[in-house]
Length: 125
Image 1 (cartoon, rainbow, N blue to C red):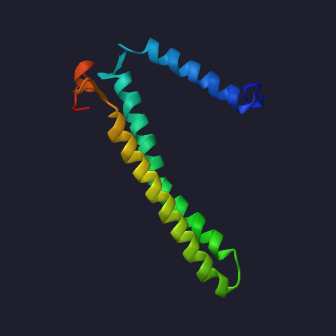
Image 2: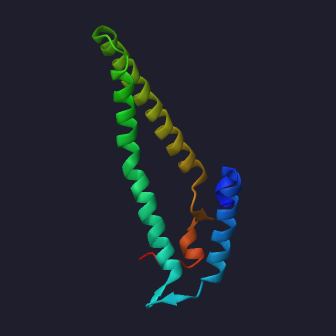
Image 3: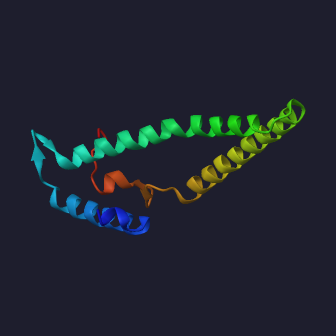
């Protein structure tokens, strides 16, 4: 019960420390023929994919609810157009900045060699 009374940043810090400890302890542990690290990776992928599936509907629904809350139909069309234009413009800038930075620094490569080859990661995972 005391853990729930802790501030959120302390709860996150405790969770990170516990996750590191569990990860260190369970590196070579297998349960029912499955390594725990692979199970952690699978659960993490499921979680991230679920978050990715929520992003677009959440943004679209928040824009629709915001526009619908304005009221009069005359200003909704003008505000809706401005909102859509703003959303598309900021998305375009975010995509362009991301592409420029990724092409400039080439993450995942070290001296033109893929990082997965350097640390010998199996690409079938």
